[in-house]
Each structure stands twice: as structure tokens, then as C-alpha cells.
Image 1 (cartoon, rainbow, N blue to C red):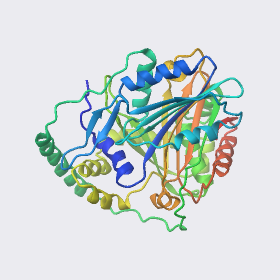
Image 2 (cartoon, one colour):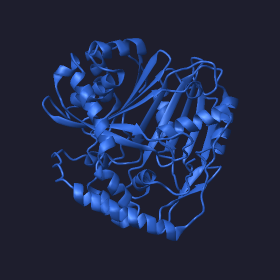
Image 3 (cartoon, rainbow, N blue to C red):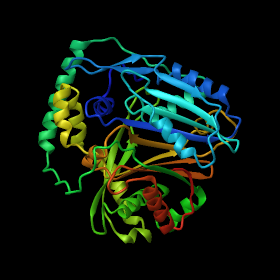
Image 4 (tube, helix red, strand yellow):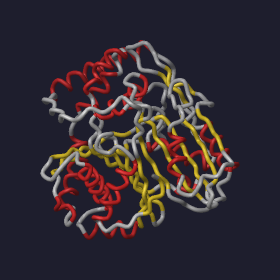
Length: 425
């Protein structure tokens, strides 16, 4: 069993982004379900989440010790509404939920909200700080709450001196690894200047028939996951950030979560190096091989970024802020979440509807996001008969609004002859 008394290096990364760098990362799951998911069911779900692994807030400490988790049963907020969401207004409703305050230290660190729709369905949103949960943790938290077996935080004894010594040794080892593997930084491309106005990253969620999606992948000598990666790369290319012949690094998140694991964040990333080529539309073999090699390399090599994250835990905020000054966000990220558990997809109701899972920054300015260098991030998940794809535009210059992102995504899906339903924009 993994206890969670102190923040891991991955937890700390997102805490730094939220409270030091002012680029908070917030995750959201949005469900559209049938009317048997009512306010009582949502409130019971909320009770289960309050009693489970999400009932935690972070406590900042004076270094060089790791920040702590504090068991906090009232860390989250549950709200239901009787005001119907108009047909076509699901995206606006979801964005409103996403923009409500979230704070992993002061709380609330998560919000569960629900409202009926004008056509007789129910919209449910779960927004949470990435500090307290990644995709795997939220899948587990909801599944446990629905099944009535929540797993609360288990905090070990505080041993600040022991932790300080072990963290110091880990940081020293990581620093040596950084020096050993250091390579010259790739020059950042010169780009126009964005404004200091607040910018909400545009997102879109679409559903595709899973049988058609899988057949399209097979016809191009690929897998469903390879096709998903190709779609994300295609949207990035259409945005103008990359062109034919360019070399692109694609981040492929991989869960490291074990059974009985209470960590908030338990993942790493494989990195596929690919050259943009129109040949992928006929044959996905090269892209598939690049992704496979990325997974092998992840198991074999030590990522210098991981070492940097470990070092950051031993540093004061001012030093971390300077260290993070040149850091960026992925140009291209494709996170394949796979088949969603029935308990998660239905929330205990009788029918499965589309489920969108996305991650974005909230409250940052367009200038901050442009400087970070991000491009397109996307998440795929599967429920019976349906593949749901959610895209986020992280570049306020290349993808300034929802209309632009929608055009890019639908254009790329059309290039693959994939018909999609836009249900969240």
C-alpha cells in the first residue's frame, strides 16, 4: 500500500506551477448522462469523494523538506442546480465550472457540479487541481465513490530531519544526473508578442464511432492509439506551428500507478521523435514505430527533467521560480486514457454517455502561455461504441479561440474520413 504523507516530486511540480509560477493546471471531467442521474445520486457521489482520496490539501513547509498532505474531508465542494442547460450551451456551462476558483492549499481543491439539460439529460462536471489528482487518481476516486468503498488519505509519521536528509541525498544525486546528461538547449523560435490579457485555452470534445475509428487505424497499418497521435500531430500542423519536414517531439503520458496506490500523481512521459510527413495519412507504420521506441526509451533512460523536478523539491520558492523561468509546456501531447470503467462512465446510472477529460491552465495571461511554447494537447478515452477525443489549444497566437480550434480538429478528422459529433466546444 502506498501512503501519501508528503508530496511526491510529480505533485510538487504541479504545486510549483500553481503557487510559484502562476500557471495553475486544472483538470476537468464532463459527463452528459441520462436523466436517472439526479441530484441525490450526485450528492451521494460527492459524499464518497469527500470520504476518499480527494479529501486532501497541501501544506507548504520551510525547506529543505517536502510539502505535506493534510487529510481534509471538506477539501471539495458539491453543488447541484435546477436551472436547465440549453441545448448547444453545454460548452459554456462546462467552461463556467472550469473557471471557478480551485486551490490545492487553501481549498477547495475540487468541485463537483451538476445541472439538467433542456433536452432531458444531465450535465456533471468534476474540476480538480492537478496537484491533488492526475487522470489515474480521478478514475480511482470516482470508481471507489460510486462503489461505496472510498479510500481516504493515509498520512505517515512526520520525520522532518529524516526527510530533509533523504531529500538532500536525492537532490544531490539528481543534480549529478542533470550535469551528466545535460545537452545544449534548443533555441526557441522567434514569435510575435501576445497580450497580458487573461486567456482561457480553447477546448473541443468530439465523439467518433469506435468501430470506424479502429478500422481506419487498421487500414493505415496502425493502432487506435497511433491514429490518435496522428490526429493530434495533424491538428498541430494545421495550426501552422509545424510544417512538413519538421522534427517534432510528441509527449505520450504513461501511468506508473500501482494497485492500491494513493499517490495524487503517478505518471511519466515517453517522448516520440517524429518527422512531419504527409505519408502518415496512407501508412502509420513509421509513427507507430516511433511511439514504440519512445516507450522502450522511457524504460531504459533517465529523463533529465525528472532529475530537475527532484532537485526543485529541495529549493526555496525564489530559486524554483528562477529555475522555472526557461521551462516550457509540451508542443504536442497525446494522452490515451483507454477504456473507462463502467462505474466511472455512468456514475452509477444505467446508461453511458460521452465523457470528456481535459487539462488546461486557468487564470494565466496570453503572454505567459505564448512564452511557455505549448501547442496542442489532447486526450482520448473509450466507452462502449464510442471514442471521445478532447483537444486543447495552448497557443493563444496560433489557436486564439474555439472557432479556430474547431476548424482545425474537424478539418483533420475529415482528412481521415472520420465523422465526428461535436458535443462540447
